[in-house]
Length: 287
Image (cartoon, rainbow, N blue to C red):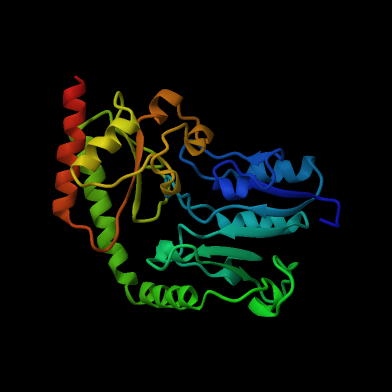
């Protein structure tokens, strides 16, 4: 803040918790598959002066598309900016090595690993220093004063350890998502899988059923005991325009028909069959 630089330049598909930090600054554009365009980042850095931080997520929370973090960090550092990566959606699903990627700051969240809600971590590169978020105590290496949530921290640690132990199950999850997507397109040939041609994390699919809005899909699937969301999971129950799909150039009419499906190690092929039956039935009823 004291540098006089603008605060943050972020991609157009970041989580609102990042986008709303600096809403008026230019956003890095993405391709039709939802991949950050490095040339867009370079142009912004050249034309708009110096920024304090560039922020790009490791994998998008709606589409699951994996982003070119190493290359984006190199662009940021070449312009004299620090680089932050929101790895909440990616940790436990793809390898994350801060040093190899060149990331200065990395954020993760326990609940995405199966840990307790409300617990997160900001991981700093060696030698990196930041101002205290809450002053008045020596906790969290003087970065956040106040009594720690010991049960939450312990739960976070257990979840992180178990993710390491269960990392081989990600192949099973990827197989189920692949089966679901193939069966969805077979049942409804004009169904759209967003980010289909880009690298994606194994557990997430963003799928549109043209002609049937997301709210209708969510309600029907919920009645069948299947939980999905419209866009970001933290926006479940709210059906509105997806800023991620808008950034990808998707027409609002089609974007309103998109749902996000997430799988875990406990999901089964039988659940895929049930999803396809209920979901494709909506299209048949819609004519």
